[in-house]
Length: 104
Image 1 (cartoon, rainbow, N blue to C red):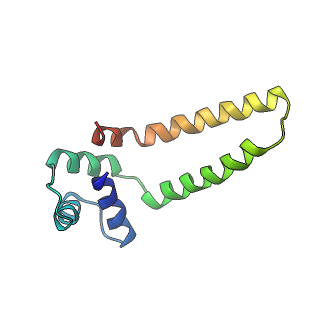
Image 2 (image 1 turned 180 degrees about the vertical axis):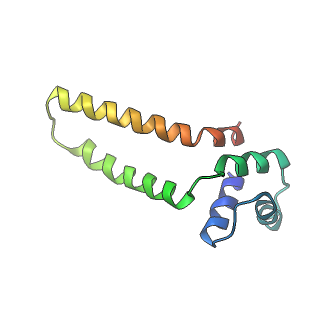
């Protein structure tokens, strides 16, 4: 988790999420750096807009809550919503597949 926190911190202050910067943040926090995890993180985040991912995740959280509290609708509508949620979940899982290596 520390590696992801380092990437989020770097992103929050507008710095590049690269190997050197991630190492510096981790070392400053007193964490022994695992080079393989740093490389895996940086490679997994290559081409990813972290702010966009955070925005989408927060929107999905707000959308999912009211949908769960909505009154019961027809079976077709529920099945269609479930199918859409599964498709969104698959897309989200694909985007974070590279990060799963960090949590072994």
